[in-house]
Image 1 (cartoon, helix red, strand yellow):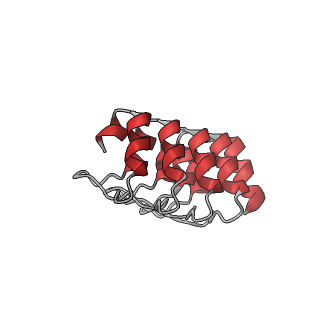
Image 2 (cartoon, rainbow, N blue to C red; image 1 turned 90 degrees about the horizontal axis):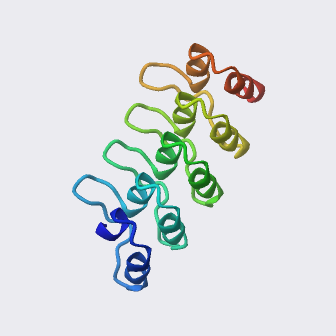
Length: 155
């Protein structure tokens, strides 16, 4: 985990070559190597981890944030695009607030990530958070008109 946190790509490569590495283990804070790489905004390490067939792309932190949710939260379109392409992605996974990656994109007024998630085709725009609001409700309240139009178009 330390190699991921410090962004040491070469060290991560060496560790991943080890057959006994448990890639989906979590640290004491409940973060996996993948979620730490996203939080550290380290694209190269994310790519290395995603290349492993045993990676659990939907593993979540203690706050139930997946790598995709974190990518949307931190406005990392490049990472979100990698995750959406992954065959095992659970695009509608929710965090502890009942919010998907789409909610995070809306809060950030991020049309690019919102489009990416919608383009995936499996996005559930009827998902309500713990406050009983959908991403569309929030976009309308925040007056993010381009995202409102996008979500209404598919709704």
